[in-house]
Length: 413
Image (cartoon, rainbow, N blue to C red):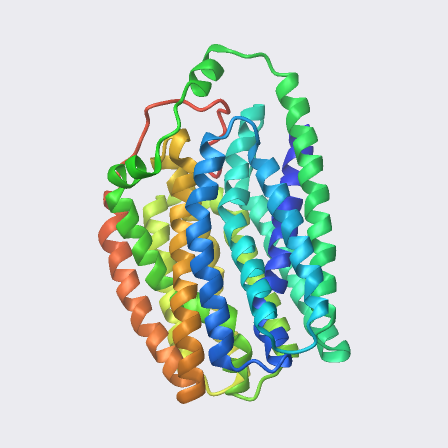
């Protein structure tokens, strides 16, 4: 049963990140084909990010406090809404205000799912079985890598009309895996006796949003540093096609680069628990921030597509270590009643980076080109790295309770 729970959660991560390819990675490809300009695409993605920032704390608060709908149930409801919105893209053959609104909703809902998907690993640990977040998240990278390579080639051969169809198919798979995971979880819980530790855990009261802010000011400042570090990551996710085109690349190479990037993430996710035994979470977050900085700097000075592929080798120790490290840090410093809010805070700041990257990126690309955009991304990454270095080691640790699952320090073992 433990193996089944991990496999099904890995499938959830896989399908979530496959849909990321539709909603975010190939957004520029889809919208450029509908006659949108870079600036207009930037506004759409920024508006989606703003909406997601507003939605995330509300959904996180609901997930932390709801007694009627489970975390998986909330995720299923949002996924059904995404299916309807994605299918409706076929009704718009060209640029239109309604198409812009629908795409904003799609990107916002998808982004808002991320803290819920990540926190599902905590939720599943209540079954009494270990959930290895690092390995599960690596499944997301593998699925994303394969999906982007295939989708990039299909778009080149058949056009952008294939993108919404692929999105609907992936979301249907996500719903299936959510249902399967929920079934495994219920079987585990029903067969597990309620012990004293479980009772103590269940008495843990949810923490209100305003109290969360007061208790975690330093953590929020650290999250602001994350926003500056991830500005460059958001630029690559939204405008990689334009960056590659600046050195002679195309959409097929974009798909392969996204796949290459995702495959590089695998070792960091899979072996994070081993790395955690050698390095502290705080130290790994510092190393990852520096790796991000090197990656964007080398892309800024890159003379060719091949050089950009080489620069992305830093993805090996940047994105997976930073993401897994931040998830693990929340697990270390947050109580159960604020855990989803902690995940939402990190994800919200990453989403805000997408707001600024989308708005500034589109305008800068239209006015000055990719080189200036990458220079700005490098400068902001320097600032964010300094903030991470100054704050991450000072964030408090909370040990006020013992969770149900002895393995719920998810990446530690």
